[in-house]
Structure formats: structure tokens, C-alpha cells
Amino acid sequence: MESLSIGQLAKTAGVNIETIRYYERRGLIPRPSRRESGYRQYTRETVTRIQFIKRAKELGFSLREILELLSLSLDPATTCVDVKKRAEIKIADIEEKIRILQGMKKALITLTMECKGSGPVSKCPILEALHSDAEAVKRSAAGRNKRS
Amino acid sequence: MESLSIGQLAKTAGVNIETIRYYERRGLIPRPSRRESGYRQYTRETVTRIQFIKRAKELGFSLREILELLSLSLDPATTCVDVKKRAEIKIADIEEKIRILQGMKKALITLTMECKGSGPVSKCPILEALHSDAEAVKRSAAGRNKRS
DNA sequence: ATAAACCCTGTACCTAAGTACAGAGTCAAG
DNA sequence: CTTGACTCTGTACTTAGGTACAGGGTTTAT
Image 1 (cartoon, chains in turn green, orange, purple, red):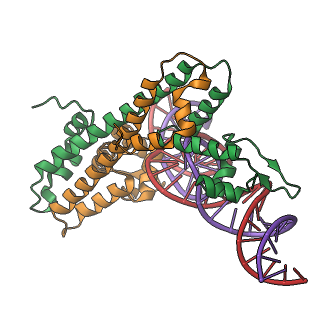
Image 2 (image 1 turned 180 degrees about the vertical axis):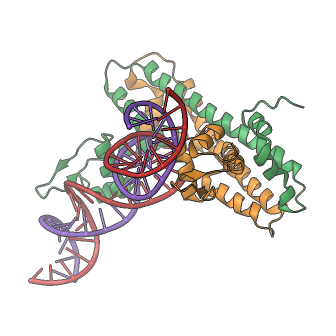
């Protein structure tokens, strides 16, 4: 078994067949050679390539960014710094997302603590806040709860 | 000015006209009365409604969830606990997202620290990790970096 | 009365990362 | 030799939350 069919590749790499063709369209994996029938023929290299893509995705890179990383890694003019820069940008992206989520969480916790859990919905502090107290929500969501 | 045109409502509430019609289609705001011409006529209530939606979105609720919150708040059988439960589920959702992002961040930081920033891309520890060290990436991304 | 600004419906488009066919051809096992 | 599994291309669909027209009708200000 020196060459892999698309189905074998899919199973080995742990992705869908459709995903492989999609990655090919996106330029993330090279167009493979074909049999006379037109069937795609892959080498083990492509398994590695797909695993690269999967791991980069786990680190939060988009397919567009992964494409960039891949072309970087092929360009002899690239230095390690170029790659490191991408990673640092991604870290900053992730930190921003975390910040926003923590603001949301804080606001929600504040609201749920105000809610005793008894009484009708008409006096629910959570809904009341959504209806009228724009500032409280905004302050918390932005992570700068100044009052108190 | 007792009734608002869709344009006035959009400006007042700080959303797009298209967004208002979209919310109407989604059932997030009630179908308004119409003039003879077919023009939509809104009341101030709808401003409040749209602001509710905007704030709930800031707290991380999807439009589908907001629809649920709105029908809860109209149902007299709803109690405060029902709303509180939604908020708590949302908090858990947010915490899960934060956990995943922190795993990504940790893995990326580990990799960038290994990278001295000098040397050719062929020896970049970041790319090397993506190419072969599946476990290191996974461990960090999952937030359970066992091998210290 | 006419031009600018507004509004209507309906449909298509956008991003991201795929997934799901339809309709055809090919390969492998029994 | 046939049947089932596999593969091909091309297109449409999915989720979420909108945005952008096209091609009409209406309102308002001058």
C-alpha cells in the first residue's frame, strides 16, 4: 500500500472525504496525481499535511491562516520570526476573545446573584436589567464595573 | 410623534432597517400595524424590545435563545427560576468557551517560548510541533498539561 | 408637480468550514 | 458478471446573523 485512495486517506487522517476535496479546493493540500480512472492517489505526506491542518485548527487558526502558515513554511526566505509573529497575533486574538467572554460571564453572574429565584417573572431582575438597565449590562460586559 | 416609521425606529434603537425586518421574520419583534400604504408603524415599545435584544446579545445569548427568553417573559406560568436557569446555562457555556481558549493560548505560549526567533523556518519549533508532535498540542489545548 | 428620500417584497449574497446530494463512472469480491 | 462499495464532478445546502440589491410604490419638501 504505497498510495492511498481518498477514502483511505480520510480514514487515516480522521477527516471526511468531502473535507479533503474541500481542502484541495482551498489550496490547503496539493492536487494529487490521478489514476487513469481519475481517482485521486495520495502519498503518506498528505496524511501529515492534514494532521498539520487539524492541529493548527485546534490552536485556533482559521483555514486562511493555516494556508499562510503553509506557504510560509515553503518559502525559503521565511524565518522563524515570521512564524512566531503569527503565533503571537493569534495569542492576542485569543486573549481578546477571553476578555469579552469574561465580561459576559461577570455580567451574568451579577444578574443571577440578584435573582433570588422566587417570585414571578414580571419581577425577575435579569429580565428587568435587559429591559431597562442598559448601563449595568454594558459596564459589566465591557469588564469595567466602575460603580461599587 | 406617537408612531415610528421603520427608519426612525432603526435610528432610535441603533440597528439597521434590514435588521428590524429580519427580527420580525425571526419572530423577535411583533408584526407591527401598517398604514394604508403598507408602511410599518411602530410604537416606543418596539424600541425597548430591540434594546432588550441588543443587551441579551451582549451577554452572549443567540437570537434563538433570546426568542426563548421573550416567550418566557410573556408566559404567566414562568417563574424567575426559569430565567435564572437560562442564565446559568449560559454562564456554563461561556466558561467552556473560555476553557478552550485558555488551552489554545497555553499551547501557543509554550510553542512561542520554545522559538528563539532566529534561524530558518525549517527548524521552527512551532511548525515542527504542528508537523509531528500531536500530543504536545493536544495536551495543552485540552488544558491538562500532565507532563510538567 | 416633481425630485429626494423613504418604504415595500422578495431574493440573493456574505463569512467559515464544511456537508449532502445527484447522476455518472469504476473497482473488487464472490 | 453482477452487485455493492467506492469515486468522480458540480452544485446546493447548512448555521448565525445579518446585508444588499432590484424593481417597484409612497411621502414630503420645495
